[in-house]
Length: 110
Image 1: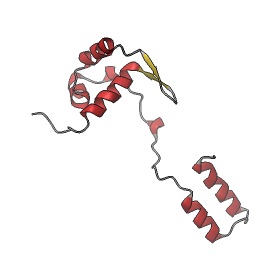
Image 2: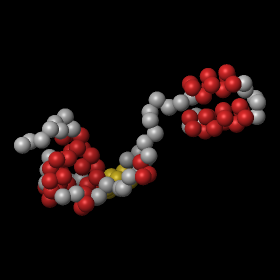
Image 3: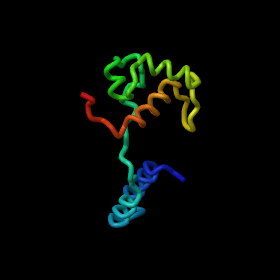
């Protein structure tokens, strides 16, 4: 199945070449749009735990930076973890998990 972006590009081409009229184009273009917003992941820096300080780690993950490294060793998390679409650093995978566990409580502990 082609990606929606490819389908929409083909619709634009078909409309430009007068294979479909305006009404058909608008209908087909509307039903072939993604329900999920585009997330420009390529403009963000890759995750790097070393760039975070202890207070940021405590706020995001509820653990200090040194504790996160200790957790990786104690839990036996490998240095790299294979996901279905890419290879992820073990620390990054652990931080994703810890952030999910910390998610419901985002108010300050002071």
